[in-house]
Image 1 (cartoon, rainbow, N blue to C red):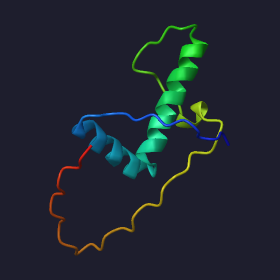
Image 2 (cartoon, rainbow, N blue to C red):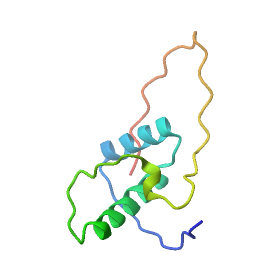
Image 3 (cartoon, helix red, strand yellow):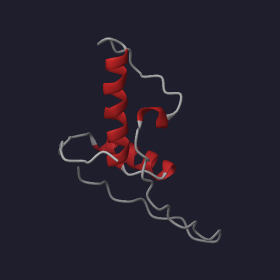
Image 4 (cartoon, rainbow, N blue to C red):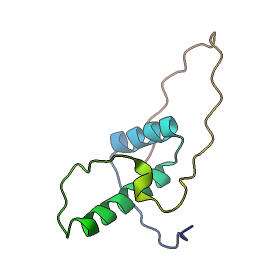
Length: 94
């Protein structure tokens, strides 16, 4: 597995970060794992295409861009069917 040695702070608008968190929840991934996958796929496509990128990238499978296993986070247990709806969460600070 590749060692993660470099840190790259990234600023996103609140909506994009919340959407990434929702996607991560659905896929069982952390936001950091999604961002690493996106960066790795972009860099590999750039190299394969001779420096020409067409966006959006067309992914067949996410694992084609990884030479290491994607670590999935634990999914929360399903809520009981009779549970009351949750109150809307406060916006997250970015």
